[in-house]
Image (cartoon, rainbow, N blue to C red; front, side):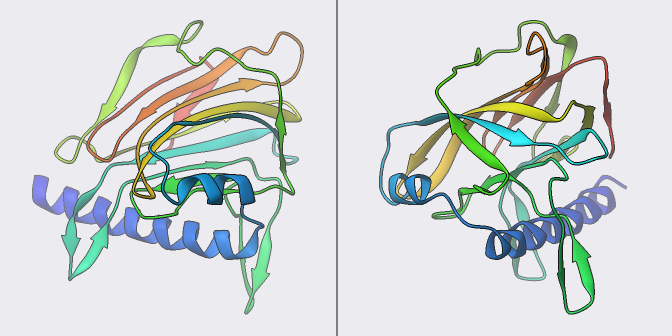
Amino acid sequence: MLLDMHRRRGIWISGLLAALIAAAVAVQASSAARTRAAGSASPVDATYSCHVGSQRSIKIYGGVTLPPINGQKQPGVFALTTGAKSVTKNGTTTTPSQIGFGARKNSLRIDKSSCKQVNKKIPLNSKGLSGPPETATPTQFGHINMRCGAGGSVLVRLRLTIAGGVPTQALVAMRSANGKNRPLAFYKWSPRKITALSANNCSDIG
Protein backbone atom coordinates (compact mmCIF):
# COMPACT_ATOMS: atom_id res chain seq x y z
CA MET A 1 0.00 0.00 0.00
CA LEU A 2 2.78 2.42 0.97
CA LEU A 3 4.71 1.49 -2.16
CA ASP A 4 1.67 2.16 -4.37
CA MET A 5 1.07 5.53 -2.69
CA HIS A 6 4.75 6.38 -3.00
CA ARG A 7 4.71 5.44 -6.69
CA ARG A 8 1.60 7.50 -7.46
CA ARG A 9 3.06 10.52 -5.70
CA GLY A 10 6.35 10.03 -7.51
CA ILE A 11 4.57 10.06 -10.85
CA TRP A 12 2.66 13.21 -9.81
CA ILE A 13 5.90 14.92 -8.80
CA SER A 14 7.46 13.95 -12.12
CA GLY A 15 4.56 15.62 -13.91
CA LEU A 16 4.89 18.75 -11.83
CA LEU A 17 8.63 18.90 -12.47
CA ALA A 18 7.98 18.60 -16.20
CA ALA A 19 5.48 21.44 -15.94
CA LEU A 20 8.00 23.50 -14.00
CA ILE A 21 10.64 22.95 -16.67
CA ALA A 22 8.14 23.84 -19.39
CA ALA A 23 7.15 26.97 -17.47
CA ALA A 24 10.80 27.97 -17.24
CA VAL A 25 10.93 28.04 -21.03
CA ALA A 26 7.92 30.34 -21.10
CA VAL A 27 9.28 32.93 -18.68
CA GLN A 28 12.44 34.98 -18.54
CA ALA A 29 14.95 33.43 -16.12
CA SER A 30 16.63 35.73 -13.63
CA SER A 31 20.04 36.53 -15.08
CA ALA A 32 21.47 37.26 -11.63
CA ALA A 33 20.15 33.99 -10.23
CA ARG A 34 21.44 32.08 -13.25
CA THR A 35 24.93 33.58 -12.85
CA ARG A 36 25.17 32.90 -9.15
CA ALA A 37 23.73 29.40 -9.51
CA ALA A 38 26.48 28.38 -11.88
CA GLY A 39 29.06 27.56 -9.25
CA SER A 40 28.54 29.48 -6.05
CA ALA A 41 28.38 27.72 -2.70
CA SER A 42 27.17 30.94 -1.02
CA PRO A 43 23.46 31.46 -0.36
CA VAL A 44 21.33 33.39 -2.82
CA ASP A 45 19.35 35.74 -0.57
CA ALA A 46 16.75 37.95 -2.24
CA THR A 47 13.25 39.30 -1.66
CA TYR A 48 10.67 39.61 -4.43
CA SER A 49 7.30 41.28 -4.73
CA CYS A 50 5.16 39.03 -6.92
CA HIS A 51 1.84 39.89 -8.55
CA VAL A 52 -1.10 37.63 -7.65
CA GLY A 53 -3.78 36.76 -10.20
CA SER A 54 -7.48 37.51 -9.94
CA GLN A 55 -8.12 34.35 -7.90
CA ARG A 56 -6.28 36.06 -5.01
CA SER A 57 -4.51 32.93 -3.85
CA ILE A 58 -1.09 31.35 -4.22
CA LYS A 59 -0.04 27.71 -4.53
CA ILE A 60 3.12 26.47 -2.82
CA TYR A 61 4.59 23.08 -3.65
CA GLY A 62 7.62 21.45 -2.09
CA GLY A 63 8.68 17.92 -3.00
CA VAL A 64 11.63 15.77 -1.92
CA THR A 65 13.78 13.61 -4.19
CA LEU A 66 12.24 10.17 -4.76
CA PRO A 67 13.68 6.99 -6.31
CA PRO A 68 13.57 6.82 -10.13
CA ILE A 69 10.42 5.41 -11.72
CA ASN A 70 10.80 3.56 -15.02
CA GLY A 71 14.29 5.02 -15.29
CA GLN A 72 13.00 8.58 -14.89
CA LYS A 73 14.61 10.68 -12.14
CA GLN A 74 12.40 12.25 -9.48
CA PRO A 75 14.43 15.22 -8.13
CA GLY A 76 13.05 17.32 -5.31
CA VAL A 77 11.45 20.62 -6.35
CA PHE A 78 9.96 23.83 -4.99
CA ALA A 79 7.45 25.92 -6.91
CA LEU A 80 5.48 29.05 -6.02
CA THR A 81 2.60 29.85 -8.36
CA THR A 82 0.67 33.10 -7.96
CA GLY A 83 -1.63 32.74 -10.97
CA ALA A 84 -0.25 35.96 -12.43
CA LYS A 85 -0.22 34.61 -15.98
CA SER A 86 -1.13 31.69 -18.18
CA VAL A 87 0.58 30.32 -21.27
CA THR A 88 -1.14 28.58 -24.17
CA LYS A 89 0.92 26.31 -26.38
CA ASN A 90 -0.36 23.79 -28.91
CA GLY A 91 -3.88 24.29 -27.61
CA THR A 92 -2.93 23.57 -23.98
CA THR A 93 -3.08 26.30 -21.34
CA THR A 94 -0.77 26.09 -18.33
CA THR A 95 -0.14 28.36 -15.36
CA PRO A 96 3.64 28.76 -14.97
CA SER A 97 5.30 29.13 -11.59
CA GLN A 98 6.75 32.48 -10.63
CA ILE A 99 9.57 31.09 -8.48
CA GLY A 100 10.92 27.58 -8.86
CA PHE A 101 14.00 25.42 -8.35
CA GLY A 102 14.90 21.78 -7.87
CA ALA A 103 17.68 19.36 -7.09
CA ARG A 104 19.05 19.85 -10.60
CA LYS A 105 21.93 21.93 -11.88
CA ASN A 106 21.08 25.56 -12.73
CA SER A 107 17.39 25.00 -11.95
CA LEU A 108 16.57 28.32 -10.24
CA ARG A 109 13.98 30.27 -12.23
CA ILE A 110 12.34 33.62 -11.45
CA ASP A 111 9.51 35.03 -13.57
CA LYS A 112 10.79 38.60 -13.77
CA SER A 113 7.65 39.78 -15.55
CA SER A 114 5.60 38.93 -12.43
CA CYS A 115 8.18 39.20 -9.62
CA LYS A 116 10.32 42.28 -9.00
CA GLN A 117 13.30 42.15 -6.65
CA VAL A 118 12.93 44.61 -3.76
CA ASN A 119 15.29 45.84 -1.06
CA LYS A 120 12.91 45.02 1.80
CA LYS A 121 13.99 42.00 3.87
CA ILE A 122 11.07 40.18 5.47
CA PRO A 123 11.88 37.87 8.42
CA LEU A 124 13.15 34.49 7.31
CA ASN A 125 11.31 32.47 9.94
CA SER A 126 7.90 31.04 10.86
CA LYS A 127 6.95 33.64 13.49
CA GLY A 128 3.23 34.43 13.38
CA LEU A 129 2.26 31.15 11.71
CA SER A 130 0.09 28.53 13.37
CA GLY A 131 1.44 25.05 14.02
CA PRO A 132 2.13 22.26 14.13
CA PRO A 133 4.63 22.09 11.26
CA GLU A 134 4.12 19.68 8.38
CA THR A 135 7.00 17.42 7.37
CA ALA A 136 7.74 15.47 4.19
CA THR A 137 10.53 12.96 3.55
CA PRO A 138 11.07 10.29 0.86
CA THR A 139 9.20 7.80 3.10
CA GLN A 140 6.64 10.20 4.60
CA PHE A 141 4.19 11.89 2.21
CA GLY A 142 6.91 12.99 -0.26
CA HIS A 143 5.58 16.51 -0.69
CA ILE A 144 3.74 19.43 0.92
CA ASN A 145 1.30 21.21 -1.38
CA MET A 146 -0.90 24.06 -0.16
CA ARG A 147 -3.00 27.00 -1.25
CA CYS A 148 -3.07 30.29 0.69
CA GLY A 149 -5.38 33.25 0.30
CA ALA A 150 -3.53 36.42 -0.66
CA GLY A 151 -4.08 39.98 -1.78
CA GLY A 152 -2.94 41.56 -5.00
CA SER A 153 0.73 40.79 -4.36
CA VAL A 154 2.97 38.79 -2.06
CA LEU A 155 6.45 39.28 -0.69
CA VAL A 156 8.73 36.28 -1.05
CA ARG A 157 12.14 36.02 0.56
CA LEU A 158 14.31 33.19 -0.75
CA ARG A 159 17.60 32.08 0.75
CA LEU A 160 18.99 29.30 -1.41
CA THR A 161 22.23 27.42 -0.86
CA ILE A 162 23.79 26.11 -4.08
CA ALA A 163 26.74 23.73 -4.46
CA GLY A 164 28.16 22.95 -7.88
CA GLY A 165 25.16 24.65 -9.46
CA VAL A 166 22.68 22.38 -7.62
CA PRO A 167 20.31 23.76 -4.93
CA THR A 168 20.91 21.89 -1.67
CA GLN A 169 18.93 23.86 0.93
CA ALA A 170 16.38 26.66 0.91
CA LEU A 171 14.41 28.84 3.28
CA VAL A 172 11.36 30.53 1.75
CA ALA A 173 9.17 33.02 3.63
CA MET A 174 5.98 34.34 2.07
CA ARG A 175 3.93 37.31 3.28
CA SER A 176 1.03 39.36 2.02
CA ALA A 177 2.33 42.60 0.55
CA ASN A 178 -0.76 44.49 1.70
CA GLY A 179 -1.26 46.25 5.03
CA LYS A 180 0.91 44.78 7.77
CA ASN A 181 2.62 42.18 5.57
CA ARG A 182 1.00 39.32 7.48
CA PRO A 183 2.86 36.00 7.19
CA LEU A 184 1.39 33.36 4.86
CA ALA A 185 3.81 30.42 4.88
CA PHE A 186 7.37 29.36 5.60
CA TYR A 187 9.14 26.42 3.92
CA LYS A 188 12.43 24.84 4.93
CA TRP A 189 13.41 22.75 1.90
CA SER A 190 16.08 20.19 1.09
CA PRO A 191 16.04 17.23 -1.32
CA ARG A 192 15.70 14.86 1.65
CA LYS A 193 13.33 16.73 3.99
CA ILE A 194 10.81 19.56 3.92
CA THR A 195 9.21 21.35 6.87
CA ALA A 196 6.45 23.91 6.40
CA LEU A 197 4.20 26.10 8.51
CA SER A 198 1.29 28.14 7.22
CA ALA A 199 -1.35 30.69 8.19
CA ASN A 200 -4.93 29.86 9.10
CA ASN A 201 -6.15 30.80 5.63
CA CYS A 202 -3.95 28.15 4.00
CA SER A 203 -5.13 24.62 3.20
CA ASP A 204 -3.52 21.40 1.99
CA ILE A 205 -4.42 20.53 -1.59
CA GLY A 206 -2.85 17.06 -1.74
